[in-house]
Image (tube, rainbow, N blue to C red):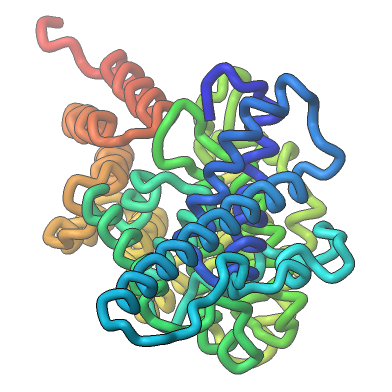
Length: 436
């Protein structure tokens, strides 16, 4: 996408890309080639649509364009194989029937839909979601590939979500594509049992896409509503597909209860407003009601999973009309269960905050010491930011300033950095004058 492209067209292309890749990959069975073909179709759209206007069905236009490029690719491969076969025959003087150039191994009717109505062929983004969680891939590779193909996240954003270097993530995604291609397993919507087997990875992908939308890891914007909204939409679709699964319901509840605060999280200039300073009357009460009803229903059905626990924590925050009304003891108890269930260092970090809110900041700081040795958090700004916050609450403003400064230097989110530097400035004003 070029920076001079009309923002409306740019957003439309970004929103359509996962669905188009899903349609082309599902129908041609080659994910890597489909991605390349769709990229070519997107480039054509960026030059033609501003001049000629939007087509009647932009999605159908992109699918047809990518399919033509896939057809050209298949024909070129067929011609190459024909030339190679002919050369072998001439060298061996053996007779063999060589396929004609137009004997291409796919059905054009199935490629474009029997009805010809591309918009009626199902939710290809949902299909792509399950397709990317391929049995030939490791769990981490499947999640990374899906974040790239379905979430539209950059390699750098995915690396940040996994707490690994960008180069490592680029190699992981490249290997995932190659493994799918060489596995021989059909790249198609799995059956009911296989969907259930892939479900855990699918839910984790949706969780990460939502998180990147709610708190963007880099750039000038704190949030990407397009990502969080799409994650909620896809989670609703998965919930409709498997309505009895309580963890799907828990994830949907978590997203709704968290996204309900979105409008209150930023100020007029896009600046970050922390939870305790938000205007709670601006929270989306309909989303809170829906999320609360979902989590209340799922918690009564027996086994409890990590998404349900996180949703229950989010519900406790949303139910508090004032920061001081927050039931931190119950939140701490839920985080205690969650830390025993999950080896996620960010969960451990949040547990330390909850512990500090109940037992005091000094006790919370002691918990942070155990996280210093966790390589997944090494260099992560959140550990320093939480330590600075607890030091500030403990009254050690000078130490808090130093850790806020380290956190600000490490974050790649401009609103996060601006918030941290503002905290530093405010604390400096309150420091005692050594010469007074």
